[in-house]
Image (cartoon, rainbow, N blue to C red):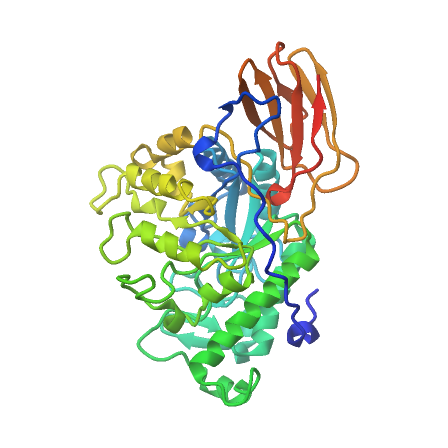
Length: 498
C-alpha cells in the first residue's frame, strides 16, 4: 500500500525520452502498397472512449439494475467500442470517493446498487468483468479515478458510514453543491494515492486516468481552505501565495501519482484529461475559462515536464468555433510538448444528440473532421471520445461513421519511457490458411497480435485479440510476420514463419 512517508521524496522521472516511431496515420491500413520485402511499420493510434458512471451517464444505465443486466450492458459497450475500431476504454471506477469494484477501502457506489455501501446482488466484481471482456476484445482498460470529489449534486441517498465524508470529515470541505477532499491537506492526497495503489496492486489495469477535477470549479464562494493554507503554506517554500500554493499541491500530487503507477505496475501509464484551454489567449485569440487560475491546474507544465505519459486536453469545441477553434488549440498543445509525451485530444461525441431531440446537435461529420485533423499532425497520435453512450445509441449514425473511419487496425502507441512490460517471444506455427499463436512463457501479457503478410505488391496488417490463438491468412502468402503487442502497445519480439 502507499506509504505517506514517501510524499516528500517524489522521484523526478527523466523527461527526455523520445516517442517511438509510428506509421503516419494517413497511411493506416490492413492493406498497404509496398515494393519492399520488409513489412511496413505497425500503424499506431490511441482510440478510446470514456465510460462515465457518475449520474449513470454511460454505465450502468440506471442504479440498482440486476447483476445480469449490468453484465449485459458491459458487453454491449465493449462490443460497440470494438465495432467502432477503438482500442482502449477509460472506465470511471471512483466518481465520488466510492467504488464500482470490490474495494477494501471505500463503499460500493450508489450509482451501481442504488444505496452507497450496498453490494451487488448476486455478488460480483464489475471491474473484473470489464477487464475480462475488454481484454478479450483486444482493448486496453484504464481506471478513471476522481481523486478529490467526495459528493456530487446527483449523488444518491446518504453516505455510508465508511464513506470518506464520515470517515475523515476533517479533510472534507463543502463547496457549493459538492463535498470536496481538500488537496492542500497532505493526508487527503495520501488517501487518494492509497486508492490508486490498491487498484494497481489488485487489478491488471493498463493505466490510471484522471480528468479535469482537481480543485473544484469556482462557485459563489471561495474554496474554504483558509485554515489549511495557514497550516501548510510553507510546505513548498516560505510565504508562497495562496494561488501558487494550490497549484503546488496539485503538481506534487501529479508527480506522486505517475511515480506510483510506474513503480507498482510496470507497463501501465498515467494519463490526464485537463480542460482544453490552459489560459485564455494561449494561443492568441482563444477565449474561455482559465483553468490555471480557476482549477489551479498547470496542465501545460505537466506536459512540458513529462509528469504525465499522455495528455488528453478536452477540445470540446467545433472546428470552426470563433473563440475556441479546434486546430489552433491542438497545435498550441503540441507546441508545449517538450518532453515528447503522447497527445490524445478528447472529443465531445455526446454533443451529437439523438434524432428528434430538441437540443442543438453536432453532426457526425464534426467528429470525423476533428479526427482527420488529428491524423494530419505527425505528433498527435490518438483521441478519446466522450462518451460511450453516443456509440451504443449510434446517434445519427456516428458509430457507423467511426467504424468506417477506423476500419483499418491501429495499435496503441508505445511509451518507451514508462517502464514498458513487453510480451516475450511467442511460438508461431503455420498450417495452410491458419497461423497458430502461443504467447511466450516470459514477459508481459499479450493484448493484441499484429499479423502481417504479403500478397503480390501489398502488405496486409491484421489486429487479433490477444486471447485468440489462431489467425487467418491466405494460403498463397509466402510468409507471415507476427508481433505480440502488450499493454499500452509494448511490442515483443517479432516472429516470421513461412
